Image 1 (tube, rainbow, N blue to C red):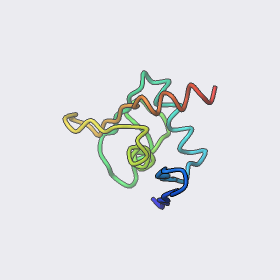
Image 2 (cartoon, helix red, strand yellow; image 1 turned 90 degrees about the vertical axis):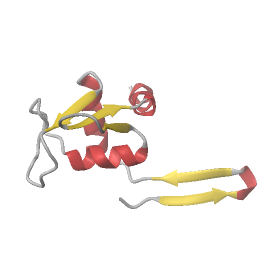
Image 3 (cartoon, rainbow, N blue to C red; image 1 turned 90 degrees about the horizontal axis):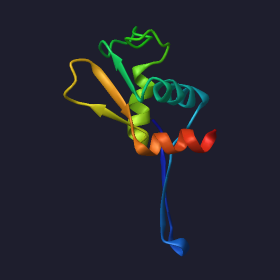
Image 4 (cartoon, helix red, strand yellow; image 1 turned 45 degrees about the vertical axis):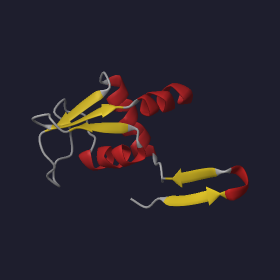
Length: 95
């Protein structure tokens, strides 16, 4: 995932920018509606839906983890993601 990092010296701010597409938003909304969690059987490239049958990709979930909007449950038997407080805030602010 391509991200840009910029330090705004006059404002003393560090800005990290990620491309955020409609697919990212759709994935985040589906996870939010699914009680804030999603599980995948594995990380195979042909896998195109989660265990609940939602047509979302684990690849976009990985990108949302990098953005800080999801977290990965390392102890889960499956590939499992949970929405973070920042992901919830983003969804609530977009309503």
